[in-house]
Every structure is written in C-alpha cells, then in structure tokens.
Amino acid sequence: MPATSRRAVITGGTGFLGRKLAERLLVGWPDLERLTLADRAGPPDGWQLDDPRVELVIGDLVDRGFVETVVGDDVDLVFHLASVVSAGAEQDFDLGYAVNLHGTIGLLERCRAITAATGRRPMVVFASSVAAYGSGAGDPVGDATILRPESSYGVQKATGELLINDYHRKGFIDGRGLRLPTVSVRPGQPNLAASGFASGIIREPLDGVDCVCPVSPDTVIAVISPRRVVDGFCRIATIDGDRLGVDRILLLPGLAMAVAEAIEAVERAGRGRELGRVTFDVDPDIQRLVDSWPPAIVSERATALGFAGDDSVAAIVRQHIEDELEPELAVTTTDRTPLRPHAGGRSGPDR
Ligand SMILES: NC(=O)c1ccc[n+]([C@@H]2O[C@H](COP(=O)([O-])OP(=O)(O)OC[C@H]3O[C@@H](n4cnc5c(N)ncnc54)[C@H](O)[C@@H]3O)[C@@H](O)[C@H]2O)c1
Image (cartoon, rainbow, N blue to C red; front, side, top):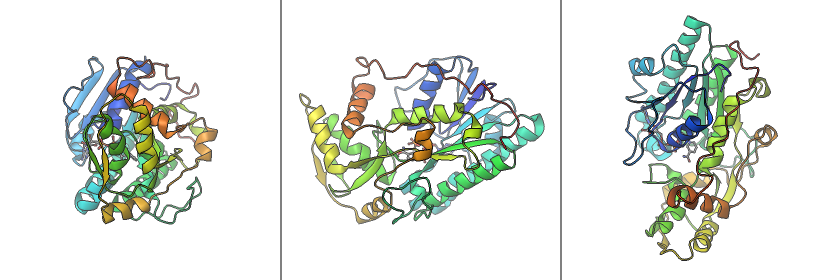
C-alpha cells in the first residue's frame, strides 16, 4: 500500500480473488479505514465479512456514474479485478470489450480525475492474465516474451497492461499490475473460464463429485495458488514503485501442472476420503484455447523482487484442503503478517 493509503477499493470484490484479497487486507493492514468491494454480483451464500470497515456496493463498472460513486476523491488504492473471464469474453464479444476494455478505461479516467482534482495519485493495481500471450509464445514463457494474444480476453488484458503503463507514464495514476497464470484451486462453483478444469479436476473429486475434464490428460497448464496470488497483490502494492521501472506489469511465476499429475496428487492427498472420479470428454475449442497458453512460466523480474510461486502440485492440493475443506484445522488459512508499506511512499509520479 502507499504509505498514506487508507481507503481502498476492490473491483470484482465479491469474486474469487477479490474475496481472498479482502480477507488478507483486513487482517494485514491495520491502517485501513475503509474497504469497498464493488461488483455487479453479490457474494456467494455463506460468505460475509463482519467488519465495519467493509462496504459492499453492487453495480456495473461499465456505468461511469457507478465508478464515480465507488471511487470517491478520497480513495488512494484500487485493485482492479472485475472482469468478464476468458470463455465469457469469447462468447460475448460486445460484453467482453464493454467490461474488460471500456470499463478499465472508465476506471482509469476516474482515477486520473482524482489526481487532477486533488494532486494525489491513486494507485491502481491491475489483474492481467497469461492469456495475453498467444500460441507459440515460447516454452517457457518469460519476461521478454512478446504478447500476441489469440482471444478477445487476451487482447483486452494486453491492452489493459499498456493502458496502466501509459497512465502511469503520464503521472495520472501510480500504475501497477500482475500477469497471472491460471489460479488453482478455485473453490465453489466453476465460472466461465476455459481454464476451469485446472481447478475442477482437484476440487470436485475432493468434494466427492465426479468431474468431466474437457482437455486430454497430457495437457500441461501453468498454475499458481490463490495464496501466492494474494501475496503477489499485497507485495506489488507495497514495494517501492521505482523498482518496477517503466514496465509496471510483473509476470507471476507459474508451476507447470499436467492434468494426469494433478489427478494423482488428489488421489494421494485424498486417501481416506470418498473421492469423485475424473473422466475425459475433450472439447476441441477449449483444448485449442488452452494449448495456446504457455505451459510453463519463468518470471525472473518478479522473482528478483521477492514474488514467489508454488513448489509443487501436491502443495497446491494440500493448500486447497487446508483453506477450503478443513479451515478449522489450518494455521495458515489467512496470513496475518502485517503488510508493510514502502517507507518512501509518496504522491508524485515515479519517473
Ligand atoms: N482466476 C484465474 O485463474 C485468473 C487468471 C488470470 C487472471 N485472472 C484475473 O483476475 C481477476 C479476478 O479473477 P477471479 O478469478 O476472481 O474472477 P471472478 O469471475 O471470480 O471475479 C470477477 C468478478 O468481476 C465481477 N464483474 C464482472 N463484470 C463486472 C462489471 N461489469 N461490473 C462490476 N463487476 C463485474 C464479477 O461479478 C466477478 O465477481 C480477473 O480480472 C481475471 O481476469 C484470474
């Protein structure tokens, strides 16, 4: 967080990562005065944050009036997580562009207006995706790999990254972002993401539910756990912005996970449980899309700045069991370590 930061907004705040990030900020950031969760949908049943600092606001980010209401002049930190996810943006071209591109521009313009009105630049942390790479990007993909997306979602994320860099360069915002590998394991109901199988093949058998996997067992996908992503969002918001340089977006490390390996890890970790079965019914469209994503990710810049990935597929499966299935037994469900803002946080642009 910037040293002065007290009022934060998470767009997409009732989504999967938004909820996890909110839980972490509330325990780790004692100076936080208000945390606004802005989303077009309410949280899933059973999830609530019993904390007077939390404000839940339901509305559409495409509506600039809504953005103005949510991001008031006193806001100094916005985590921009709201998005129509991959298969959703592919199915509905207009909706994908409205939310993922024009919604992002509206949010950036709102933050620019705050800077103009107050002389205080809000920090905007953008959630990008490795879908911004296309097929043949290289194996492994790294910091220098060219972005050549082959999906509307990927184009919208790549454009969002460029916009963050440009609005930062102009001094309109303190722009930062993370390019995320597929996050696994996603709890609860699957969303429209084409990568949903990377969570489903772990989550559903552990829930005792059978799962139909739409890609072949030898498919390899780069993944990162929810804990490492939340750590990453906290770290990027607290590091000295000068260390990011001109390119404000960091690629997070992704562990190469083969579908067959994940199924074996669940069988080992789930001994003693009634496990659901995984069967295969390959969907050529999903297989093609997933095959266009990088199977392994090496992130030298992020690693040098202290961002970590996951050690093994087995550790990711264990983390899901601890956080979602046996949280009462876990000691690490929500990291309570205080977040330490970079001491030199300031309001002028990092040049
Ligand atoms: N989960 C992953 O594997 C993954 C991987 C790479 C990048 N990302 C990115 O991380 C971010 C968070 O992902 P997630 O997994 O939590 O997704 P999610 O679908 O669980 O959450 C996204 C939230 O955005 C909200 N939203 C969508 N359109 C909106 C609009 N017009 N106005 C207001 N809210 C709107 C949705 O209601 C949802 O709650 C997204 O930007 C996503 O693209 C996620």
